[in-house]
Length: 275
Image 1 (cartoon, rainbow, N blue to C red):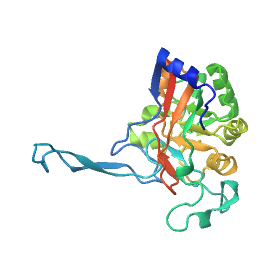
Image 2 (cartoon, rainbow, N blue to C red):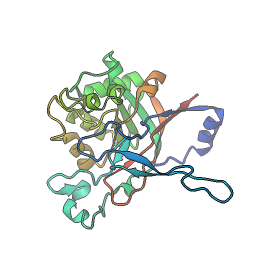
Image 3 (cartoon, one colour):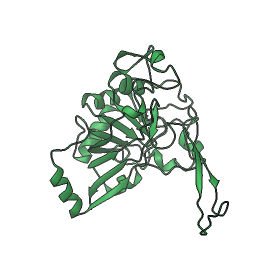
């Protein structure tokens, strides 16, 4: 999803000075994550000095083990089915034969160099963090768009801030099994889908509203976005720097790893704004 009509203007803007804001968390062993997915592990496989070359040089490397939905990542359309079908009526059981998805795998997630809109719902409510289990409504998104001075449209990325990402360093609090977690309601998902965006993300583990004690038992917003409308979901985003900068409209640069047949892929999302 790349815009090519304004290449020289874009280069001119870069030369004039831009600021790049990270919208993702660093990956580290022990970080918070969904109980439904494998966690992230990294360890050094070779250390400096384990082997020394004749000229005195040495190298170090690592082993990384991770799930596709760990850390900041993008959901592929193969991630969720409903009544046995993926987006577009694809048979989910048939797609996954052979240990990988042959349709809608992570390698099909488009690179997103497009317009982004930052919808700060926590700021709309005048709080740093929305209440646990709060359901973000279509009206909340409309008010956040008014605050940002920009409404998401076709091909855009919509980033929704709840403030919950402030808890990312406390895995138990962030997952919020007992307290619940704020997130999108079904009517908010329809509001976004009506605007024909390509992707949407937020600063929580499941993107959608999780009531206290409910866990990830049902995820209807995933059905609406992934299955019904083919809209990718980005989870575990880091939104605090963007909120502090007061951004509204921005250049979104999201390039997920092209993992063939996977249901999700790590991404390093960036917001590029004038310096």
